Image (tube, rainbow, N blue to C red; front, side, top):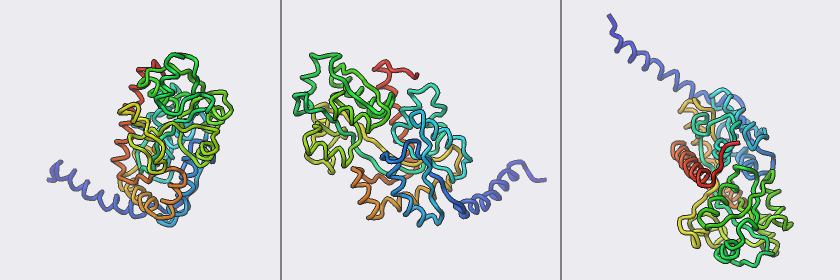
Length: 322
């Protein structure tokens, strides 16, 4: 008579060739990367730059599918509900975490509903000021803003965006009470500071922003990473004024929860190889990004750490889901 233990062990062994065959057969059709924001944004540009090397490495077409709406929730829910087979991926970033915390109707949990695949790149945020404010450094701005509680306004790409919560963290650490003015996207928020409608914005860097700084239309007071960025070496880190200030924007890919580990590993390997190519490195650098390859597990830890940070910031700022 075959014991139960022997039967279970035999079944497990029998499943191994099936799993291996499934992983070896992947991919055998096009892979879709859902970008939950409009075309032209940082995450969208990164994914479109990845198309050619990933198609070459995986041997299948890579389709970039913009499904925008509800601060990224529409596209994220679409991927959450897709088959967990590796053929539908999601472009993820810090906002994937913050939106799920700030929106009651987000419809997903960034930790439970998504399987981390690979980090692609990171970048510090940049602190931008309209030059009408007479502050040349972050310390001078803090000294200017402290006695003017409720007078200085800041913009971001929407409630719960990385820029919103990063500025709330700055408020908390600097002891300020700047007033929040939400916009519908990062470009709109930056344009509001350019126009002088709002005086402060913390956002991701770009060539366009660098051009505005060089012509004196914006003043860049700091970067949010703990050390100065090698791409902006002349700009102080915010930690030089506020020790321990540390915010990094990250951009990566995730799959629906339950996607087989073998498939995730194959996708992770392809992304890491694509990011390592000199042409891709040059494209990321042009976007102000630092390549950040690594394992799916380490990327998952990044996402979990981010969630803990922003939950604490929300609690101290008395921000609750709406």
